[in-house]
Amino acid sequence: MTELRGFYTLWLREVKRYLRDRTRIVSSFVQPLLWLVIFGVGIGASLRAVPLPGLSYQQLIFPGIIGQTLLFTSMFMGISVIWDKEFGFMKEILVAPVSRFSIFLGKMVGDSTDALIQGIIVLLLGLALGIGVDPITFIACVPVMLLITFGLVSIGLTIASFMGSLESFGAIQSFINLPLFFLSGALFQIQGLPDWMQAAAKLNPLTYGVDALRTIILGGAWQPYQVQPLIVDLGVIAGFDVIMIIVGTWAFGKMK
Image 1 (tube, helix red, strand yellow):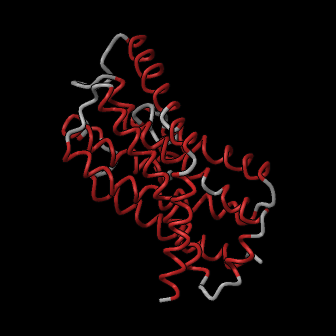
Image 2 (cartoon, helix red, strand yellow):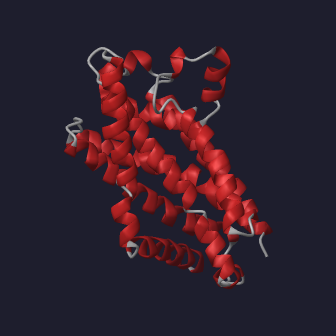
């Protein structure tokens, strides 16, 4: 019961802290909007061709922009660990009669909930821009997005547990974010890349997240170009999540 209460308290704290930051909520859709409108429409127009039969370039990158939002938001959530260290709150958590696994899980699920909210905002933004997302597709995307955030948030929390300053965390975060994003196929098909880059993309967990979202959102139009079948994508993401939760729990166990 103590473990469950500790998990719930940490989850609620992370969600409340996010919901009270109205500036971040409002600004959370600005970057995806710029990518979808300026990059999607601009590059799509410059290509003067539909990249895939029956799909516009904006439709192609829409699931990728959702993946980008989940990635950047999830990794940024690790900054909460730095702040908790700075103000001494982390010490109070670590000495509480709650296991490090419950502490990590509470923060991870809380931060994942925050990232999911931002992902949903982008999903709704697609509706406003005329990118077809019916209610069934919307409902199917939500658990997949949550599954994607678990592993990504765990990366951010793990890195932050070893960092002593915001500057150090920011530098490492950017170093990891950009390769994960650009090698995920969010902006293009990975099938057209050189062999060595395709191999790197297939080692990237976000590749399978973007591929899963495209399969759900684009349906049959994307099926011939899938990286893997949907069930394989979800299996890879789930396996990555389990590994990162184990690593994150170990990292939290090393904090003093």
